[in-house]
Amino acid sequence: MHPWIENVTLQAPPTPITVLPPDPATMVVWRMTNAGESDVLVAGPRTKAAYHTTKDLPVCVRLRIRPAACCRCSARPPTNWSTAPSR
Image (cartoon, rainbow, N blue to C red; front, side):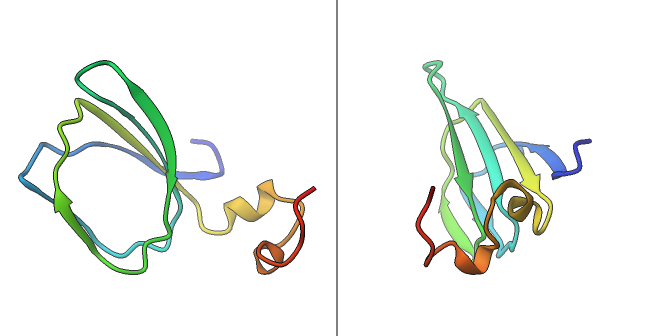
């Protein structure tokens, strides 16, 4: 597995309610709807648990990024992300 990726998961079998516990990691999520539309999003870190009605997604893949791996992709350390201008 790539050194930046900690693990890859597929969506669990559907349940009426999705429970997402707190997670300090960042995830890249790729999902597809029944209509064939898809999107990619970045999620996390999640500091509080989340509870919501489960969406009907036939495909949902989550790539969990290793802690501090995003720092290797950036020219600035994370402490400067909110204060330094992007170049």
